[in-house]
Structure formats: structure tokens, C-alpha cells
Length: 223
Ligand code: DC
Image (tube, rainbow, N blue to C red; front, side, top):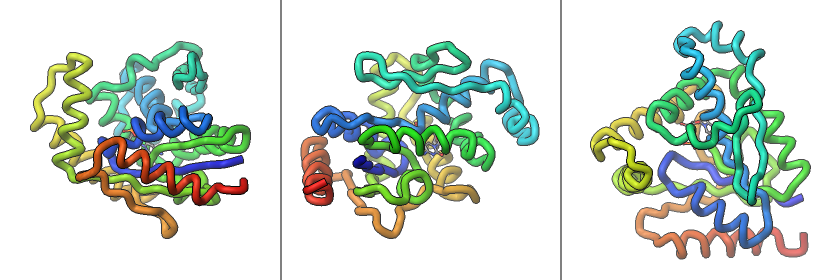
């Protein structure tokens, strides 16, 4: 099996790049952020206090997360209900970042993530894929870009779905999430020692995809 890990901060373009590469190489694209987001939806919808870690850990027994691929798109099912359309809001982003700092929440999702890579050729994006989830990945990429560029991309994305939010709010939310994700104790966002760092600030999408595709071809030739 081939596995490609793409880690990096939010708005770096991981999912756009990973989707294009998955389509081209016939890999399954696994968006692990969506798994954390689906768990966050549970806590928001059930009005649980996510600051109460004990309560969060206890509630994991009541949560079933399932990934399904419908028309080649990843859908997240939360206790049997497709919640994919609810995942990309600022409140879910923040709650996902908060609950993802909890060790038990990470362990809860880890097996399913590892399992995907045992069954399929995958390109998996997240924060700890190269460091924790797939330490033996064939290719490890850390995709990043300047905070301004990342906030602009997120802002354009949110605007496209008609969400009422200012660029300044997107920037401050993003900085907070970057801080949370990089400074937590368990599996913080950071490149692994073998990760190739790709800074896409001054690269077009095509250039970024080409660079990563060439790297994958080079590293997996003969496999
Ligand atoms: O990639 P994303 O923005 O959809 O992820 C949402 C949150 O989930 C992110 O702020 C941190 C967390 N996350 C994580 O801790 N580990 C992952 N592998 C993926 C996401």
C-alpha cells in the first residue's frame, strides 16, 4: 500500500492539493480534520461543555463516527447521520481544535485513521499524520503558507458559502487555532524529521500540486 501524509496549519491548501492528487493517482483522500469536526458537531449539538474534559471523555462512548465515500467524496456520519454539510463553520472549527487537544479524543480516532491506510492507497491530511498516524508513510509533506495568505484563502472559502464573517475575524480565529494546534501536549502540529516542507505562499495551486506529485512519483517508483 502507498501512503502519503500531508500535514500543516489550516488554510495552507492541504485538502485542495490532496484531493487533486488523489484523483490523479487513484488514491483515497482521507480528511482527518473532518473526523475531529464531526466529533465537535456532537458536542455542539448536544450542548456539552467541552471545557469539562472528563465529560468529553465520557461522552465518547455515545459517539460513532463513520467515513463513507459517496461519488468519491468523503462523507462523515455521526451516529448514523450524514453531518458533512455541518462541518465547515467557524464554531465547529474552533470546537474541533479544542477537543483535538484531548488525548482520549485523539486515541478514539486514531485506529480508524490507521485502518484506512492498511486497506487503501491513501493521501491523508491533518496535523499529526507523519508524526503519529502514519509514521511509515512513503511521502511526508508539511504544507504551509504565510498567515495572511492562509487567512485570505479561508476567508474566500467561507464567503463562497455565504458565511457572514470578516477577514479580521478569520485571521484572529486562525491564529488562535494555530496556537492551540501547535502548542498542545498530545500530537502537536509540527513537521516530522523526514517531512519535506512546502511553502505555498508564492506558489500557484498548479505549481504546488506539480511539486508534490513529482515527489510522490520519485519516492514511490517501483512500488
Ligand atoms: O484540518 P481542519 O482545519 O479541518 O481540522 C480541524 C481541527 O482538527 C484542527 O484545528 C486541529 C484538529 N486536527 C488535529 O488535531 N489532527 C488532525 N490530524 C486533523 C485535525
